[in-house]
Amino acid sequence: MNLFPASANSVYWVAIAALSCSFAGAPAAAIVWARTPYATGAGEPATQPVKFDHRHHVRDAAIDCVYCHDGALRAPVAGVPATSLCMGCHAQIWTDSPELASVRASALTDTPLRWQRTNALPDFVFFDHAAHTTQGVGCVTCHGRVDRMGQVFAARALTMDFCLDCHRDPKPELRPLDRITDMDWERDETSEPAAPVRSLVHCSTCHR
Image 1: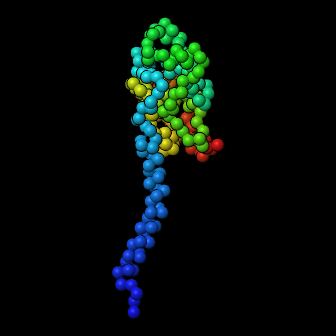
Image 2: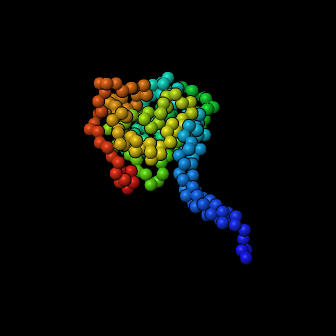
Image 3: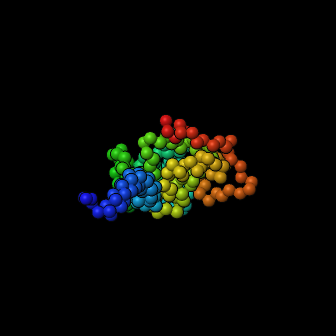
């Protein structure tokens, strides 16, 4: 006499299949989630201690990227300017603006503002700004049209896929060195890379 009905076999195999799918699906779901804007923060402005409008400073005032982020051409980290640099202009204009009260206090007390990072890579990824900018990779390639951002946000997810796509074929993203910070520059048939093109896809390029 059978203890279970014949349909129990089907239930058993369905349960086994569902369990197997869950083991395989959980990592896949996590990988997919990690690439969504919800996880990467791409496209979402961060709340900053000062309402700094890149449109006004980059487009209207024509301030070059490296004036504030001076490490981008010479160091691994682009850097965030000290408020003393801001006060080079704002000691003369908008001197009483309540929007700049925290900037003035920061400069007077030599206490840095706590800016929120908008573009972040995992700790196990090595990235050198200077290695890219000195080879002809423009700011806009990774950071997007910052000159059109009221509040700056991550324009790209900066996933491994994004980096590898460029590393496999960097030539379309390379520009003359005097156009690194030019947001409006566009490649044409006469454009040539500023340096020899190399395809760097070995693991140790980014993971050291």
